[in-house]
Length: 347
Ligand code: SAH
Image 1 (cartoon, rainbow, N blue to C red):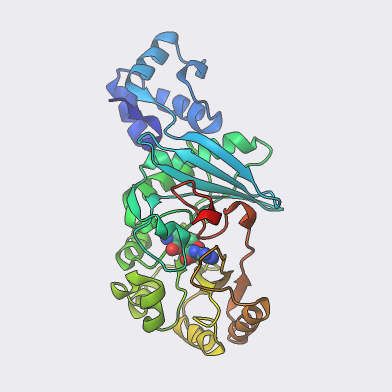
Image 2: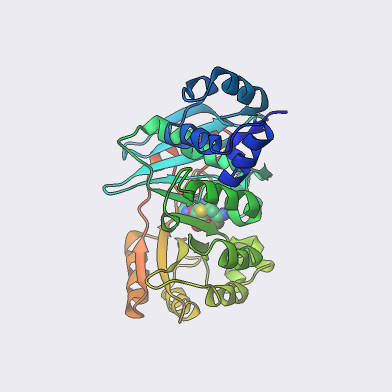
């Protein structure tokens, strides 16, 4: 069995090259080829001797994803469908913006959370992604979009629940932020969770320099139990307690995500309750217009309703934004990523 180099932190890469009898500085050389040049084959690593390249290719491999399909939205968003070595499929989304480019990565095949309004949930849960399968989404998308469009931000908001795959997500963040590897700033990485309280507590200890986003979506346990079944395990009060205890640097905020579902969670009362829930916690609220799909059991809140909700939160001095829905025409928007390449129209 060959090992995958993108599963390794720089420390592990050093001990791996040592185990092959090579000098430890080779690790940085290899890392540069993997993450700066993004080569897909050992033969490109021209500052390594032929013998070393052959040895490496006997023991290790580079890519873990096969790019199956790329779709581009009329707003420039690009959706990537990848096949894993076991035949499973995942999607990633590249979102170009004026001053930065964001990559949305998946962390699991499918998702165990079962949120009622999310299409990914309908595929059920298959398995966690490995570290290299997460990291390779970045590498392959950056390869495709080219050097002049550098990915500056990574959001763990694709398929899956990142905090239920903590170890691999953490290693992927380490590789993405190591100066000898991908070298992104920790502050430009966001991990979004449905509210896995033990995961939030671990993040507080082990990953607190990256941004935390929490998909709240409701202001009472009755509504949240229904929308987000995991709420029965981790109810709103426990999530809020974990957020109150979360260490936050100056000028930084926890993002609260709130998908706006007409007549379900979007009343003015909800807005006031939400303001009270987050009182004293440095948050910014991201209101997400519901992305509808054929057969969806919900309808989006009309724009005026979302804006009214926003104004109530503003009246409490809570920074509140309405999330742009990007890539809707190619089913790349929030909650629309699938493991199975099915046309929505035929569901
Ligand atoms: N499991 C993590 C990461 C997914 S992030 C989490 O729940 O936070 C994707 C975001 O899109 C979540 O906030 C999710 O609740 C939201 N979402 C899911 N389906 C949606 C839909 N149809 N329209 C808008 N947002 C949706």
